Length: 279
Image (cartoon, rainbow, N blue to C red; front, top):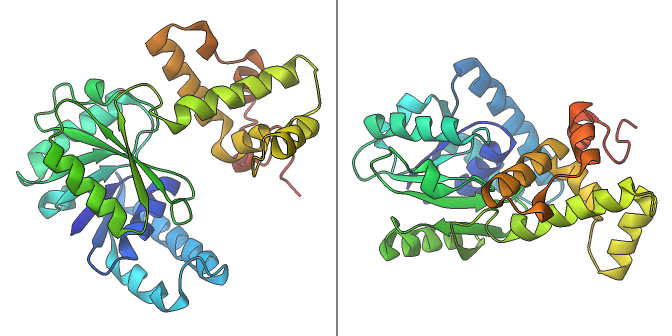
């Protein structure tokens, strides 16, 4: 299958690698600017090298994966069988992209979104063909789970086809309906927000909160360190989606989270969050 991934950031590159590992798939990695895509291909090669050193990807697959990922622009996706968008988490921007893709892609092309929390029903407004959710998790080459998000516009045939496709990548699909946050983020992000509340109330230090959850709940990583890994800006954006869509006070982002993002303390990506990563 020929797949186009629109969005050459961390998630887009990871999705491209996941598909390119399978000999049945080729990938067109796209973005709005050719220079940006060229830079992304350099980053993809560096990420592949790290994955082979860690033996997450077999060294003999290194060259074949690189050869199966082609850089391009969204206009090059015309003959692809599947298009997966992995651009910024903005409903209007995603919707506009799919409206444009409808005029570019052939009639049988399947549209999919990697959104982590946005409503597919809202995203599909004004888009003639149905959009299905394929929510991969970061880091994509290592994470086994993919949430397949369905709406009333998705046929059973399409859902089953996507299940088989995800299995072909060596990953495990779960089916979820179109509700805010789907399964994982609906549970996970409020938990991180609650851990931030415990810290904000001076109940315990960040280190002790994470130690308590690792040893008391058998979590492999503490909620505050996980927030730093995901990106506190991403956590805030997801909480805001929950709160705006449900108007439920339990989804209100903690003031400390809001302040951390305002001060550009976003976690690992900026070198500082609830923990210091600059060293």
